[in-house]
Length: 140
View 1 (cartoon, rainbow, N blue to C red):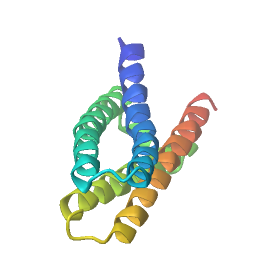
View 2: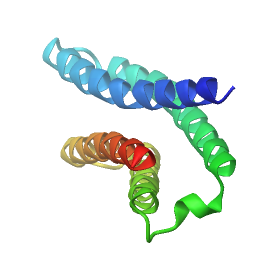
View 3: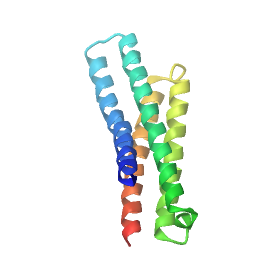
View 4: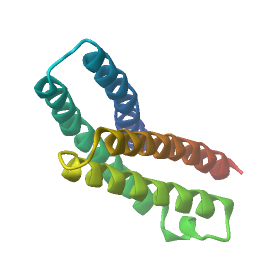
């Protein structure tokens, strides 16, 4: 049961982060090809649907896993607790940036949108790095 939970968690995170990379490349390609803004917006909106679903699944399965291992695992005095704190901090930052980006995308300049998207991508890669640290700490 818990292997399926972890699998769904990892796949959801991979869909989100991998999707960010594919979206960035797609937007660049669409713009270079002269695609109308409406096409770029349609691609971004479809990605938003997929990504928010992936984020919700990752968050739900992450919380479920935390409940399964118990509160003692979040002790900041342990390496596991520190890794968990960093991962949760990055998840909150990435989700907050994504929400801010989505809600304000029509008001922000292309430069601000690009910087925000890059920050979301870097933060999501940081989440994977924290997850690796978390996995290493769980075996220590």
